[in-house]
Image (cartoon, rainbow, N blue to C red; front, side, top):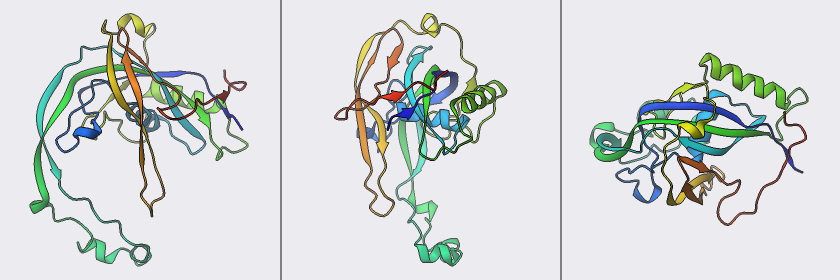
Length: 239
């Protein structure tokens, strides 16, 4: 069954720093030159997310020159252990006493990060209705909701560029973004498309990639990653 597809929606996002980490260089982070589709999807979800819809990124416009800067950031070497179901049922008493937490002081590490600076983008995406959409959910409802929230500067949580400390300022989109985008065309190589998450128990998460290319400051995002079949949608319900 084909998913019902909404119209293309846009927003503008800019900020002083952005870190879109390359997975092959994640120990000391090095950012991609442009945002990854998964990071852009996260920004749209921060503005308007409901179980009834799923966002799909179509294209990215780069307005400012691509500039890097080197910074140092404090990170942790370890990950916190997921509490067991028994602990969750018992109110996580052991977790609050630190048995399943992290002692931050000896675990902290200062690492170099190569980040993007002074970024300014315009993103275009559409959403599809999921199987969790109810009888009262429709395309028009969520288009109006998204448009209103972008105009009023509303969001469910603070949008960010890759890492939470890289705050993204959200603005209404500009008309004719292709006239504002930078005049750079280049092959960007293989880029992270998204991550396909498995079950919590097995933790089998699979990274998906695509061949990225910047043409006059615009990057088109394919509807499917490398190795997957093209996806088709039902556009009868689109505006």
